[in-house]
Image 1 (cartoon, rainbow, N blue to C red):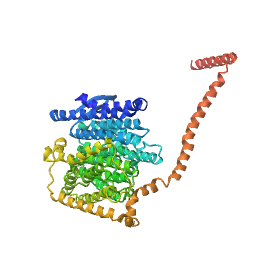
Image 2: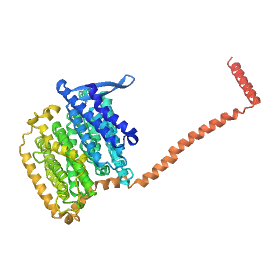
Image 3: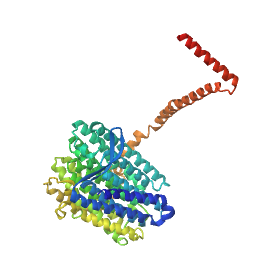
Image 4: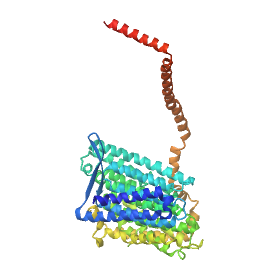
Length: 601
């Protein structure tokens, strides 16, 4: 088991090192195949660990990392249902997204560098997933953020890409600070950061709630939840395969995984769970609302990710770990699929504006069909994967007594069907705008595989697979509310019908000048509010900081420098190089010593 655990994280790291060092000069177009090999080895290793899990049960592997006096920190692996399920999802998607990228990035001058960073990204995320203590997790947590920074700004020649990667870096750092303080708090109280002893420690209610909420702050930043959601739409400046990876199973999914891994803490604090559910509900509604008025195909999907991650947080907040992680599992496949379809569409139309697209179904039937599967799964229509996971969360919200949150989640079902089919109809139906064609086989095959998973992944939560998700995560009471799927299905069909009328009837043009539409297009003016608070006073802060810099910092540095110069000049005065001066000083010293001896005796 140890060999396979190490192989899982080291194979993509080794691939990344070789590609980044030798790729451009020696490997060239062979770089992606080395990246694919690293991902494939990881997937096989995780599959073997999965078989060990069934035979031997959950295990922890621990090795001494470093010590500080009597304090020892370990590096290790947590091999349980949650880590195996997440790691399998990550490795599977990384492999097919790398395959897709061979066709998508073939003409890019940074071809080798791209695959090297992708491999390092896979290593960082897998290291985070298998971490067995918070310190180790935080290290990989920051590596994931670093990789996303490099990939969002991959085309650093573009000013917009540079701004986007800076924005992602600084906004997510706000959440990471909270996560770090949460780690400090847990350490100061329990004296350990290893999951098993920490989760069995008896905390006071106040400390438990505070630590949980500080940890959740990190999840809010990484998973782009309200109010730190503003970085994610701008992150679309990176290549589309990056978006597929970020939004499905790596960076933004890391926040959901963090809450899932910390669930033994959260589940003991009603306050923490309620905050998670409320933030999830706000994010769920906010993301869906903003997607409705967006025209950029990738930004529509970005807002959709905010909304879907909100569903996962709702599930975790209302008390269903299985529901939240199940939706994380199914969403990973259909959201990656939709981004890969978006990449093929952009590749064909050479634009990201859905108003400049149309009539592509005849020319791009495979992309159209796979995009339809992804759209139905996102909307949650039976029998796609989204139907099984999303309805479970909504039913749990009503059953747990969170009626308002349940109503919000149900309303977002309608909104989701509307915005995703507005996208689908705009691209594939209507008048043909341009002559387009299907992408290469490297791009088509991953779309087919992910479309298959978008159809079948939901079966992991049903009796057809023996309720596999519950076997991995632990049993939970079944929801007894049977009307949720029926109502949700009706809302989905209503959303699709309205999207058809809205898109083909050109309703958007009539609504563009309305106040409500402007409100959605400007994101409820949330980012404008942030700018007015944090950026408008910038000149004043600049003057203050310049005064501090020159008066305090520079003054202190200059004082130390002058002091050193003065001391040096004082002693250099006595080092003249003249024998007469040295003899005189020696005699003076001898005289002083004689006087001291006579005075004492």
